[in-house]
Image (tube, rainbow, N blue to C red):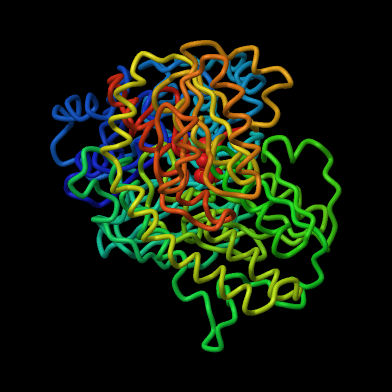
Length: 613
Ligand code: F6R
């Protein structure tokens, strides 16, 4: 997964492209490059050093030709071919007059490359992408116009792509196309631009359109033509975007992660806004699936990856407990290949911050093939999942730039709990008074999250005592289990320390053998029906010499009695508690990562949006 950017008609193409690449870095930063088009040829610069390739590219771009008004750029997360300058995009064809950037994977690149080599092409990289540049080159050489040459090349590939192509014979034109990978076009009166996502263009325009699968766009200064791959011209649909650029910047914090953790109370409050009718009943406006259809559902399947998967696990408890609907939760990349049993009475919910994660998107497509109704939970308006699903529930967390998900994770739990309560309301499995009580509890969460954040100093003190520890177990039971998994994931991805999340009751069936003096056990011990059992499990590891850190409700002396350190949180009803309990674990991971000198916004080997399998 990578970020692509392009612009034509701007007086300062290099600086526009570099700025856009900075905003796209969360999609990958193994290497970066740009190509500027002039009638005499393509000027290209590429950088691939460490995690700061866009900064390096910026330096190289100082020598770019003055007056270039059209170009494309790319920031890469390596899939085929190591991160290197040779493999960095844009890739050129054999003539050096055509440049191409690509996000996605060309699955049949090896066989295409054999054919290209046979026909005398020279391939200069190990990437799957480069073959596309040469396929377009062949079509152009036969006299095909650039947009149709692109479509012809794409008809030969299997896989996913968002591409942008420029040619020195058409200096003011960019041709773009997509399949299964996002691409947004922005317009002003005299400039046309494109990017992998909306925030990269927000500083310049709010006139945006999203390309759909199998569409090709021709951008010239201030104008856009879109056609299907079959050649039918279409009128693209405009997007509605409420974010401002300010919201996508750091706002005074050291890093995006810190800013985004502190935005969590707001993210939760926004996500809860406006979800009730005047008579007090829950109303999920965006849902687009009517009440009768929802009443006919007899099973829920939730698919997601990473932190979104952990939010989905909390939802399983909520839906089964309140709505009494059997609920399965699946890792999206497993779900789509396991021959799932689904029908029109199954509601399949895809949970995704970006709404673009390929595994989740494909899992939803698979569910649709089986006749299931499909609902997307997305933070990005008009994301691919939001557009393809029958219904959508938006988390309203604002743009999340830090690679490690924080505020979106909390907002996902909240919106999924609203869904669970709405299903309970429709099915009559909870009385209006019971639902009302839970909704009031949900509305208290922003304050509780703010209080948990205000205890940052206490978490910092605990982090100080843990510097040097190498092995961590995160334990929980019931809804505390996904919190433990999320705490472990945050620690792994930010601090690069070994951290295992485990259901506390399962430890004695094997993993307890790993507990020894020096192992840190972080337990989620907020009050719940399993609280006593959780403390008994904690005692089992404490007696084997582990250092015990517990997340516990304010004033819980019993928990404090079995712990070396306590991370206090305001008490909350058990099923809502993950929203608060995960906060000190985010801070702990953040603090340990900073002490180890790691870049918390851009952890190594990761990318924000995973649009490859
Ligand atoms: C972890 C993290 C990832 C994402 C996962 C899914 O901090 O951010 O695990 O949660 O890649 O991404 P989305 O939610 O965009 O589908």
